[in-house]
Image (cartoon, rainbow, N blue to C red; front, side, top):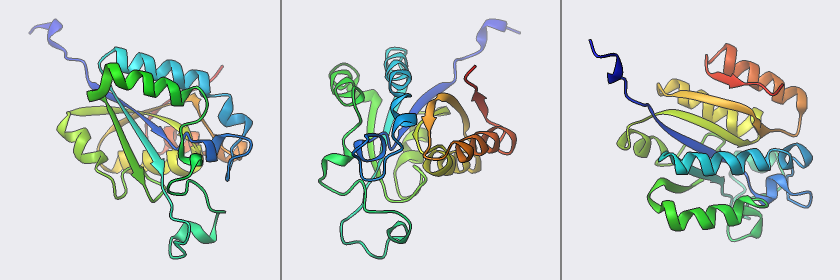
Length: 195
């Protein structure tokens, strides 16, 4: 048996909702400082991911201003509205991705989502299967909402996932902690803890 025959599993970084509306102090539904503190770690991970030949999926919430039938309408103020600057990637991530697109165009996929999970109503699973991607690294906001729901769907669809605590944040520190525990202890995914 050839011990050197082990192949590297294909990976993708899923950057979820890291937008102005969710992160900036003046955003429509801001996580604020916890979300801003993860910016550098996300930037480094984007560069590492693309330079190693892996994939980046940028998956952003999309809402219509007058969509009163959307369930989030009753839960949260209007955010990430179609055509608004609030949907732009936050801070240094916006120019970084623009720069990386010139060099790594085939590795970067943009998607809009209308529910919490990045899998719901998007072509995410189809592209992951097509590219034979087995391991997902989840980053962005909010840990206990869209990141968690994406992790649950990843589990149900048979993907492996990793969450690095330095690359996720939430409005609520306790909910953030509980979500990470759920991802690790109930879904069985690897959670890299911040020391």
